[in-house]
Amino acid sequence: MTRETGPPGGDPENSRSEFSNAPARGRNRIPVRLLLQFSWRNLWRHRRRNGILLSAIAVAVAGVLLLNTLLRGMQYDMMNTAIDNLTGHVKVLAPGYLDDPGIERGFDTPPDWQQVLDPDAVEGWAARIRVPAVIMSERETRGIQLVGIDPEQESISFLHTAAIEGERLTGRGDRRLVIGQRLADDLATLPGRRLVLVTQGADGRTREAGFRIAGIYRAEMSLVESAFVFTGRDALQDLLGTGDVTEISVRLADAPREAETMAALATAFEDLDVLSWRQLEPQAATMVAFADTSIYIYFLIVMGALVFGLVNTLVTAVMERIRELGMLRALGMRPRSVVAQVVTESSLIMATGVAIGIAVAGGVFSLVADGIDLTAFDDSLASFGMRPIFVPVVEATDVVLVAVMSLALGLVASFYPARRAVKIKPLEALQRR
Image (cartoon, rainbow, N blue to C red; front, top):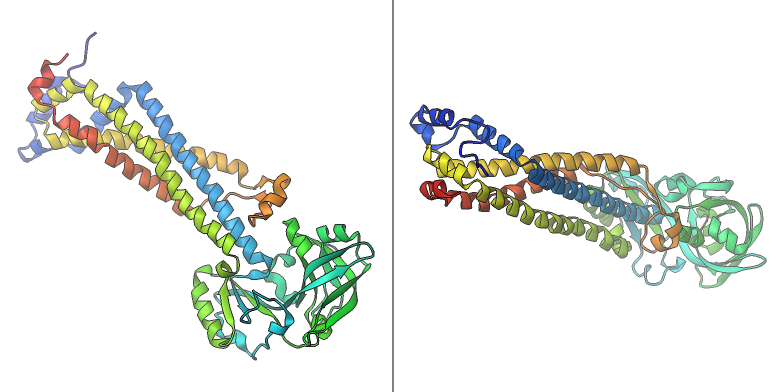
């Protein structure tokens, strides 16, 4: 079997001429144009091997990017669900309310407290009463969270966009109820019917009153539908015998300004607790943080395995080209130029594989960008704070990070086979067959 002894795709005499005619200072390094030419031709000499490696890189990059979109989707879903479900980004509560919620831990809002908020950072706010209660129909009884709201302020919660059968509350003095579809099914009731509510008033005595159902809302999670019952805030205050509220939720338009907003609210409510959604929803916050960590762990595992394959392929390529590299050294190519050639070949393979992988990931993402229907797992997803329609999310920073880190790992991995190539002595290489 005949082996090529000249430069790939070129004439040894022509290559000798190019090296020998170069200026004295240029003999220490190969011209960039010639380096790229050699590297590109070497890649095409072994189409099958390099094609397999290229496919592996593309599949690995596409897989990492697609998994990133799923993890980001899960992350954003849990965060938005926690914020939408009456939490907001920041909430003001009385001390001890989380341990023992009740109207006795209500508080009065100081006048013009909203002035401490930056309008550019805040999307909206809502002052509410939320107390535990028991709701009864002719057939069933359930424990619920009774929430008194001002409907005009609820653009910051899920209730604003929820589909409602019947009517919405008309104002904070509306003495009707809006209940969830799942609770309505459990109570076997419909809009227009009456329900009885039992709760504890501000004086510690039990309060009982009848309410008519204005409408039935549909939420994205069935657990929410069975938990929250809404009425007008003023109407609930009259029932409880108080003018206080139990919480103020603030939703931000600029999430990174959360700490700044909390500090501002702390000055307006000195004796109250100002908590972020992460403190109020620790499970969701933990899962959001876990998603970030998982992205990097998965990337390192997949790309680490890929790097070993890249190193093995490049070492094999170097061993097959010992005579060729020896002849190039004999023609005047310096060790640094040999290293540059091997590194350039590796970088070209990795860059092409990354580009193909990004294109493949983009094509697959476009097929699921509108969401993945997981309604069959609604109850299981709800326990993790996720909606049944799962929407993957792509972030430009993730794409840039995967591309840059892949190229960096490919560059680092190429130095070992490049060092093997430098250790080849020209005379020993020419004697091999």
